[in-house]
Image 1: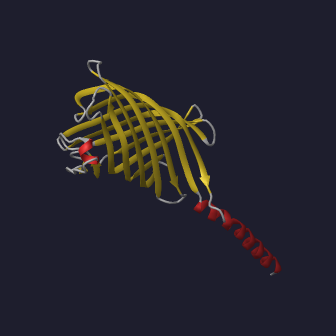
Image 2 (image 1 turned 120 degrees about the horizontal axis):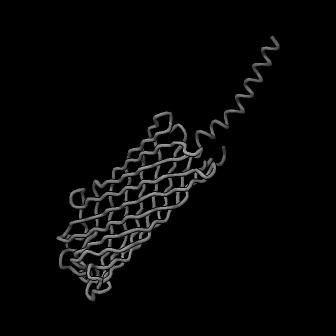
Length: 271
């Protein structure tokens, strides 16, 4: 009887030691963070500034952070995308400068398939875009502001495999537009009228996938370097276009990406 009692006490003691560890594992956030730079082509049309198409090259910085708790279905994703482009018209006589910052934040539901090798995610992100287009040849209305808030359905597929005894992952992300609002001058309206005289003329426009179709996709390949660090290469295509207030605008960017990804756990204090 004494032996059974000792076994019971020891078992309870071991279980008590294991509970804090389990609590930490359940409350810990697994964070995947990547930083990439990109270079590639840019195609711009803005009929408020010019009826010409402008083409050139640009640079981008892309940062992605994804947080997920073990044994939870939902994850949080946050992405920053900053672009700067230098473009010329077809006659090589006029130039434009374009810069934009895109912020994406959303929630995704996760499915794990094929013995956790395949991960599917679906949900939505909110997108905020701020930027400008500057035409170096225009003396009247030389610049166009870009401001857009958008709700975008999002899907991600990631497949893990081994190649040359190295852990690898291929990942594809797709964002599509649904509804939003954007700022735009009206046809023939100057920024002086808007901001100095306060003449509002339908300058805040409701957008949908009809008048503001957008397609953003990112395909990446990860190659493991260590337990925490991964080399990431890929392609980012962001195709934004609008047709509002009798004006047309599109900014198409194609970027070859290279950077690093880090994966770590964050355990809250007090556990």
